[in-house]
Length: 68
Image 1: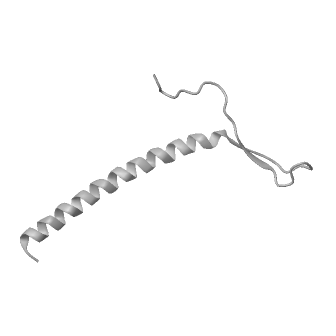
Image 2: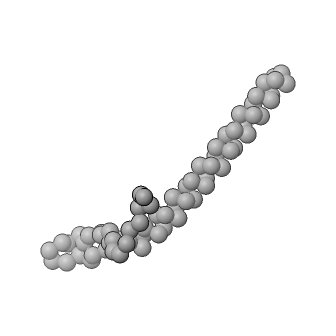
Image 3: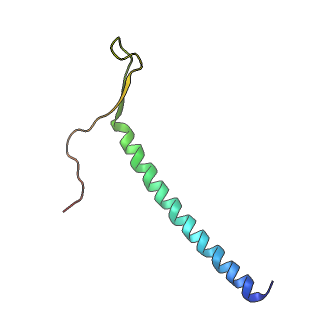
């Protein structure tokens, strides 16, 4: 393998590493958001009218969409 090919391979590897770092940061942010949202999920236990129970998503209070 020539020196030029090795340098191109090294450059490509560095770019992949940067991209993976960015993806990792984004996934961390998503995980934090989903963790916060899990506080809004509740479960209604089984009852005679709904033998399997239900999962619900509760929203209350102010929801800021940051759309100004």
